[in-house]
Length: 389
Image (cartoon, rainbow, N blue to C red; front, side):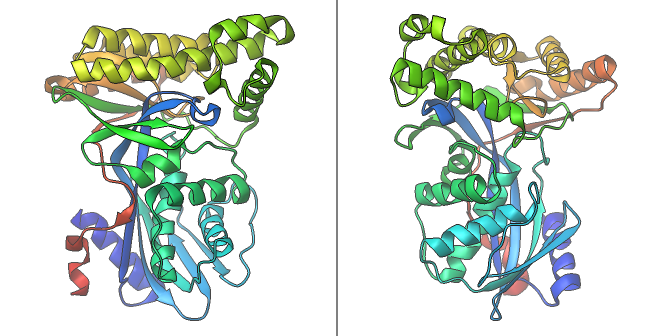
């Protein structure tokens, strides 16, 4: 913590002079079950993780927003009076989008100068973009003299990503980052944006295994799968796959392409697996956890087709490691991170074995680390800000 704070303070003094007086943070997230169910209005078991993004800032009174990203080693600058979109894929669009949507919602924003620092691996499927949006929303709200509840803030950040950054994501990432609760996963119902806390057994840890194979969420593959799901729902006469059954899907199979039918089937089955995993975790039923993770990964491979070669090699390494209980894809797939349930006593041995076996299979050096459930977006605890007292 002290190293991060000092790194931020040093960068702020170099870029802007003095020190920040506003410190905000927002966590990344990993889905424990529920790949691609969010935009189909289904269920997701999601974990806000103890890797986060911190933005340290100070108000300006000239309407300018000046940002420096330590991770990108880059700067962005725009004015509150005229928030314009930069090129597609530009990192600054996530913050510009939040400012733009808040202004549309009637917030009276002032300028800002800020340093951004993150310990969420970029492009790994752990929602670094959502954490950036949500931390920015906390700061902009403070500048605007208003406070949003977590669900409303998540909706605004989702709009920023959809409308401004050009990524047609569901609500999952932003909701988890805003509404997280330390010590708990969240069972999110994407139909009505309600959730309930789910405590993990004390003897089971969540370990993130980064394949180091980067992915691009805004790419065409994501959009194609979403379109297939929407087509399937339309043919079944329901507003989203959340409302459909496997029997209904079978009844329209002749009208769907084989590809679209496979993808709809995965969503329907995955949605049911979320509820089954919640119950398995409550009972500490390791046998059921193993089965559900295996079913999810098999479906992601054969039906939804989001699994790449590095992901297959990573799952093999995870399942062969000491203490492994279950292993599956995380995020949207196509590379990035994987998630494992691991016996808490074996986390170190598991991590070492995974690194060794994955490196042998791919020649890539992975990053493996355990995570804990973290609180949602908000201001950084006071001990980070002692320098200003």
